[in-house]
Image (tube, rainbow, N blue to C red; front, side):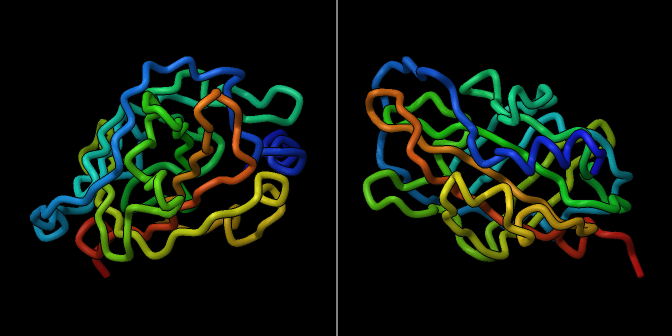
Length: 203
């Protein structure tokens, strides 16, 4: 982590948001679908910048852009329908030495890149331990497996070591929440995942 990133995280990385989502109402209750596991067909690839991310079990599929620098301590993905990657943290791949962070919005009425991660009717995560997350890079696909999910208050998120600790082979998805009027809900869903053995370096 660079010194600049420490400052940004320290004063409010948990406050992810847009002033207004202005999305056309299209939200449907999140659902899970049976999918064949991808890990058995995976193989180690060199660490590289994420370009897309999918979570097959909930139908999430979105491109990944580079996260712009924090403004007044706030990291805000500029587009609702695209995830962003913290480029001063980990790359995705077998030989990555740090956690990979992907950020995205989740909106009450749809239009957010990470909408499928949240069951808005019950305000809980739709993904479960063992579910696969596939991060595509220029080097190939990297398969991660969900370890746990947690909700954190936005005000506390930036100070939680579990979220921001450096860890090789780890992936963290952070999504903000918005209500029907486009106002930010002061909670963030955090999804913790580890690289699948098949995508990791052979020992």
